[in-house]
Length: 538
Image 1 (tube, rainbow, N blue to C red):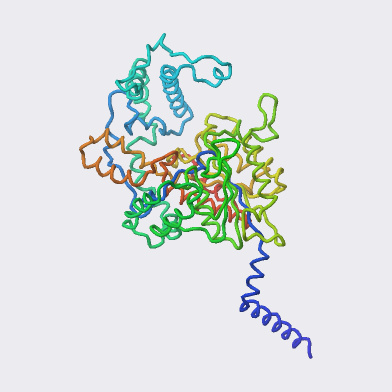
Image 2 (tube, rainbow, N blue to C red):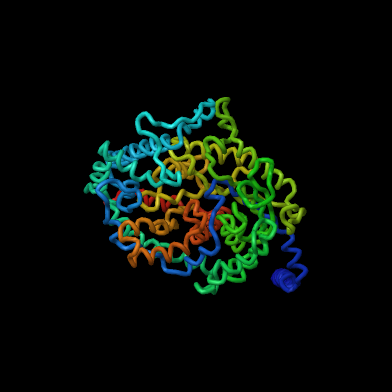
């Protein structure tokens, strides 16, 4: 046999062998068994806990609600927190550092007056006072006793109090001058116009999540969901899967086929020694939030991630509300006698290590011969670090310590920005969002850390009901329309992002895409996006 014939014969044998493998069900099963379990760790505070009720996915079937333009024009003579116009102080934006610094100073003045109100109502509530054992006392000397109505409620007086004090100090006048300054590129009238364009810019993302999470679901399919849920009685971790099946039956929110989850923290599950924390595990579905009725980014991330990778997947979720990086999640390398390693770093690492020691306990598809691989860390946290100027450097250290602890020096990391800044122009404002960008660009981490820009997914319009009421009146058609839409699109426990399923489906899907891109050796997408956002605006 000639060399050429030998070559062709060998190619034939290889092709034949490949064909046999392709048509043999046993070989396919053996091939699947050899695939490693991919483990993704999710950590953070209430952003990661998630509070989206499936019923709010109805909003994904609707065109976005756009508040009437007049909503941004109506303003009282003095500051009124319920009016959209006055909220413009928080997002006013100019090119000069001096202009933006004026805005921060005005916000700080407003914050100090709010502190006076809080001290008037709650007394000395500072952590330092609590630590020293000082008794809370009403601040009656300067501001008088805390006012209450006939039911003993003080909140109805807060707006009036703030308005009076802002007027006394002429803060309201300076706020208005600041908002109306020719330097302001993001006047409330401009901002409300930008809202209408948001979904156009993320149309492809919306189309994809509708296909994945609500395939063939119509708005009418949601009508029977609430009634069916009421028929179940109390929903907890014990009947979570039955609830998830019911949700899938009515609106098609999927249950994962190859993905399981182990969760500790603010999650519906068995109580732990750190009550009211919970601990639980099972097949991924809705219900792994603080409440067994709701979900967070773990759900949509896991469902989308499963579609993009081969083999079984295990999520490890460690999330507690109200936790900071500088304290609660403080990594070991930043340990000092005054500021020790954070308790919640320790709790999270202990749980992660226990899962890694016995993956088969948490995923029935785990094959010890194939083993597992750490696929990534997803970090969604920051609310309690607002004002923490060291956040960026602390995040760099956190990532390094996390990788060192788990012996994964190149582990892909995806961070979720705080989306509440709402506008593209303010995406990287604040210590947290700018700190995440700092970490992604850091010389020791660059290329392995990406950021998901949740600002473009934040449904700010879902918080406009009171603003529309203030601007148009409770009996107006504008308010009735807002009420009808927003009552269906907002969860009953709207902690962060209005408990919007639309937000969490978009965010989790984007996190999954970002992570798989890093796993495949792709460049972090945030660098190009940040370059566009941060360029000077004319």
